[in-house]
Amino acid sequence: MNTSGIFITADHVKSLSKDERAFLFKLLGGDPTGDNLSESQQHPSTSTDTSYDHHFVELSPGQARDFYAGCNEKTRKAVEVIARSGDRFFQLAAVAKAIGVTAPELRGVWSGLTRRARTLTGDAAAYLIDWSKGEAIVDNDGNYIDQRGEVTELTYRSFRKALGIA
Image (cartoon, rainbow, N blue to C red):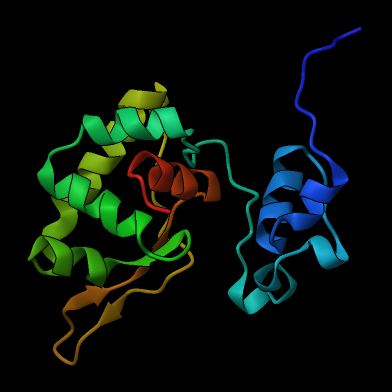
């Protein structure tokens, strides 16, 4: 009989927000339904689907600290913007503004984040940011200016914890 584990009271689970409960049940392998689903999971247009492929990096808080420690200044600023975005989705334009460059000038930052994710995980196909759910936004002259990106829920929460963001 295995006696190790974590005990969470029903009262504690009930005190969690809907998003926290959904996240907890997802971690435990459950399939939350009804009231246990977050508002965004109930409405597909704002979906926060967390069924990621195995190359989409999910960093623990310790890994997030190690990740951040190994980044250069611009890459750290990108991580900070992602962590402060309000949820796991963020806008490329916000990162560009924080760093003081245009969107196309962020190529080095994105490749740095990808290299760091691959180094940390040992997975040659790992990626930290998924751009597939956000269409590229261009200005009237056809210049790429914005796009919505996302990190996994666990990575988002881990970056927030690693950076001391409540």
